[in-house]
Length: 331
Ligand code: 8YV
Image (cartoon, rainbow, N blue to C red; front, side, top):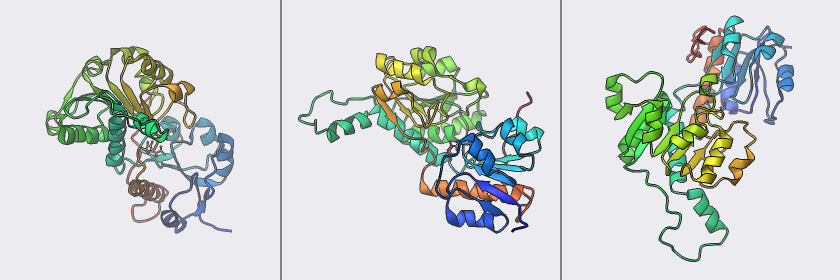
């Protein structure tokens, strides 16, 4: 029996990084990587003052009220929409996350999806694997150019800016963006990006990448009307969160040719996919792997471990976790 505070890790992580937690805490983990229901999570959290979790786990009022001993939630993600930040603040539960370390890796996947969708890579590969390649045809899998086109970015935070740099510097793209507040002029100039209204963004973008957090305000921010306002050949890429896009409307838009192509890494009810998406043409799909390089996943877990240790008052940064969640806006 240990006197040390107990913490719970909901998913299998890197053993050497997890071992740093064991220097301070009694660690309850999930070595078989089982997917826990809400009820199972509630059960596993018994007696734990710290929780290290992923965007797949919901930290809501019911969970918090069932565990008044819980002091810290360390999310292994930058996105915080799985956590009720206001409820945590009201109960003095510290929330931390993993910003910055995943910016470039996530921007890489955004570009991979953009290139793959615009140039029909998935379809072309399926054709080859089926053994259907018998001749070269002038318009075979002919897609849209990425270089020299107009890149639209909705949400211009840290990942959005990493995407803007790739577009402007690497692909000679004109970059337009929309978010609630424009960047300072110097930052716009350095990125070669110009703020436009949301309507302007939909009208101008040849390729539109979504990189904004999910909130009630961004729910279905891209739905049937927005898809209809995009250019007919345009590409839509979502590397942010499911629910920002109306998946059913997107499937219909691809089917009808309202837009040219799409690439999705996130989905409304993931890991379940809307069945219409599986049947839609010109669509490239990945299973929420935006931050998934080995180096970045290690950096995320390392930061989540540092956050948990410091927020629980241990280690050299006791009381000052390196990446606390932003304070929730008042209700
Ligand atoms: C995570 C993510 O891999 O950081 C985020 O917000 O969506 C991803 O990087 C995933 O959510 C697991 O927490």
